[in-house]
Image 1 (cartoon, rainbow, N blue to C red):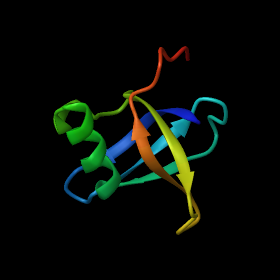
Image 2: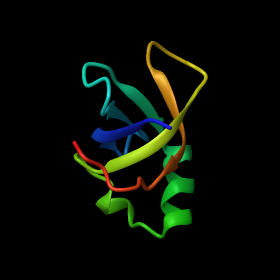
Image 3: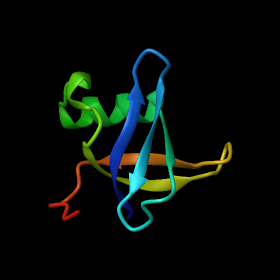
Length: 80
């Protein structure tokens, strides 16, 4: 279960990227559909999902040059 930090998320465009804690030179893609489920499930306002937000996720099928984050979760304490 990888952990990462939100590097970028654009709500208007509907996507963003996470930087994995254990591979800081890579990016993982987040689509708005995964984020919507995460926000509702955890009762988190979209405005708080900004750069630096810690996240836990599973890796889905690679749909572009980036791995795809799915099943987003609030992580256990994250030590960066």
